[in-house]
Length: 31
Image (tube, rainbow, N blue to C red; front, side):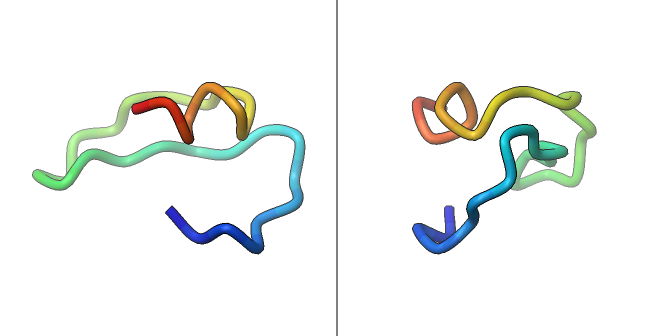
């Protein structure tokens, strides 16, 4: 994950291209 992303919510896509949904940047960084 790019450490320079500053948006509060990000759209998360898995390595396989599966859409995981929109979540906070903090949640996304935990994946």
